[in-house]
Length: 243
Image (cartoon, rainbow, N blue to C red):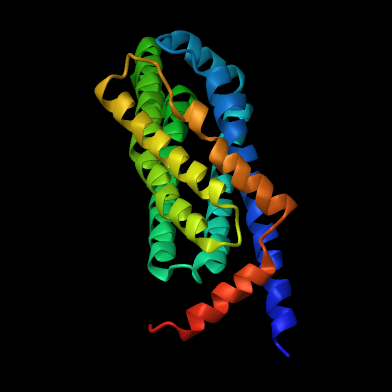
């Protein structure tokens, strides 16, 4: 009697994961391309400071969007855990742990973005610094944020795609090709970390070409969800396996 309800639940969970993925993508794209890349002028502290002051509301909105995205990221990984724990529970747990690390680091890293704005218009204490000093400090905080976001947090963001890719490949209820492409996307992020750390002047971003796996997974979850019959077969197998 409970089988129809479980079927409905897992189908809804798959669609929820797709919606969360879409919200995360929108929030991240807005924060990065709609705010940071629009307001931050590389190597130009004075120009960046002026843009931040002129567009302080937009800059704060970018921080809010990033925070919202990280909150949604937690719900996304919990939905993915519910979907894929029937395939391999330990790998699913590893995926959750890596996402929570990435979320925590990303959220804390946003303090540096706030600090950049505080230095420029934070109140009376900033009078102790000359304008050029405040601009330099703001630029430093933004550079630190870029390193924390594009290197430190990105390690865990990339690593979490490896167990997720393996889970998809073995699942049987999401196309295998999506799993391989998701794992490839994870490798792309990790290569980007190495490039940003060891050769920061190269300017090559591999994930711009490998991120298609995440887009495919998001689109599949939104449009198709999962093969419920195949998922139920996996669920039944998981019940008979030793703990």
